[in-house]
Length: 140
Image (cartoon, rainbow, N blue to C red):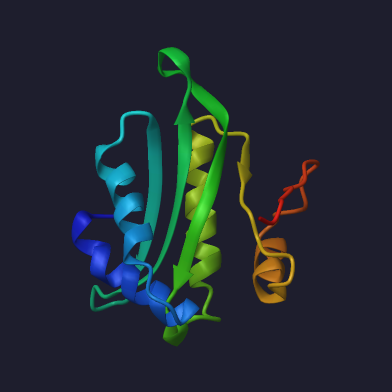
């Protein structure tokens, strides 16, 4: 991923979620290109004409003394709706997993809204399974 991909990533995200989140992606791109505490990991998919049509983003935490943790997060994925159901999401996940595996990562975590059955199915089809930990919340 390049800094120039910002508008395309925000555009895909807006198409998928029907809401614009440029502030979220400003934070993500800041970490991606400037942070020293994390090793951000990102991969993009492009159409034959070079148009960005999908992306995946996550982080590998750098532990003390620059020692990598054995776990990473996958926190953002998006595929342009015009290109969905063509294997692009699966390809992005596989490349993301392969890249992190080469870095010594043994586990990738992600959070999914349990009620988002399409996303739960997508991750399940890509070999993700419920973890042994649960996410707790408290409404205020």
